[in-house]
Amino acid sequence: MRGLRIGRAGGERPGAGAAALRARLQRLGIERFAELHDDGDAIACRLAADAAHALLPGHDTLQLAERLAAGDGTDADPLEREIVVALLASPQEFAYPSHAEFAAAVGIRRNIAAAAAKTALCFDPRGIERPACCWTYREDTGFTLLPGQPLIPSLRKATQPDVSGKCYAFSCYRATEYVILLGIAEALQEFNPVLLRQLQRQWETRAIMSGRFHDTFLHEYGSMATPLPARYYVPGDRVWFRNPDAHSSDAPGYEGSWVIYLGGGLFSNFWQRDRPYTLAGKCIEVYHWRHAARRDDDGELQIDETVVEARVRQSLADPEASAAILAAMLRYRDPQGVYADGGCIDSTRECPRRICPGTADIVLPG
Image (cartoon, rainbow, N blue to C red; front, side, top):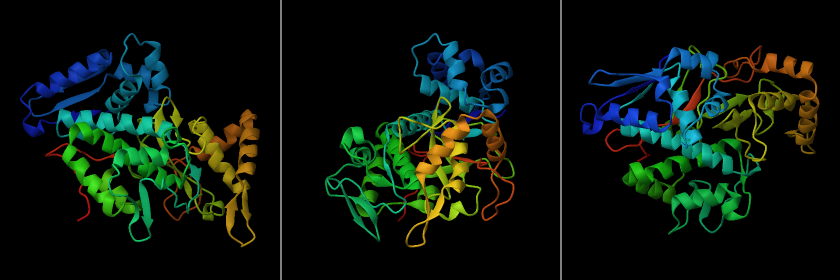
């Protein structure tokens, strides 16, 4: 178990980071679970072996929130507590140059998970619809902000019908970008207002999207050579579920599914937010895309969601059928372009880069 390593960048005095970390663990009611060592240059902190065995055996975090709540005697934020414990139990080290950067990372994860739970959209892989009061579109720049429209409220209006009163058209990939950007921007209000102003100017001129968004804002941890445990997720992670069926994966928007891990064993469902996915439910849904692939009148491959929903209900009602599907789908995915014996589980997760002054590694395009 690797856990955390927190440095002393930014002029932190010796011992200050360790004291701040101990105070956070105490406030969250989890200091008894942690092993902390301060060598003067950095703080190493991880979950004690007995606590790890009790709370997340085999690095399975899907029941972590429930197990933490069972012994909860604090009024601490349960989502923050789940995030910190999951990071302490990470099989790959999370290194932060300062305690401020660690605090920002926890805050961003909390923001992303909370925003994803509020997000409700209309699925359309080619959708180009945003609130006209604050967004405008051009093919060469994407959706940009209208003059005088601040980034954070505009992102909320685009993704949260409780704010806007309407659901807008998104692909799942673009939806995760907006939710992640919102989570980062909200944290920047506290940790780096200068970078927030730079983000504002960026989205007034040109959106950062797709591969460039990933490269600019996200860090990918885990790899196909050293995969993360299949049931290890930290709230705020962006997660990819691959469609392992070669035929149905040709349908636009069904190559796989991008979601946010909300915590508590649940993954975001941007199209029906009151029905977030369990790991099993998501795997079974992706499996049944193969049974719902149809050609429309123009010959384009489409997925009939009514067929998917009916098949999922049928499978969930049959324990033997569910077990057989999960045995195949809970395998790690094949490499890109390969459709063989792999399932839908990715070996990596994605989380935001650093944001604090002096240690931020978000570099906006020139």
